[in-house]
Image (cartoon, rainbow, N blue to C red; front, side):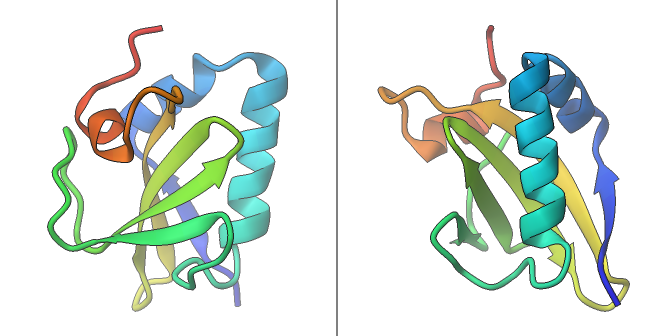
Length: 107
């Protein structure tokens, strides 16, 4: 049985701000890579831990999915089989993940 996805309002806005091609690629990656085993580390997925500072509320641990220059920040609830997508943000090469987490995308 697969997981269900919930998108926080901010993540929906951030996803919609992406160009259509990039938005589709991110959406497809979310559903393909997180649908069955979202809390296992892989080449494009990693656990950021329990004490990460972000400008949104989440239940630890926070996870990150990398899709090209976009970062998807999410939490996993194994009991209810729900993945909550909190943020979908561009990560410029000059910024760290910590900086991206505390700053909403200005583009």
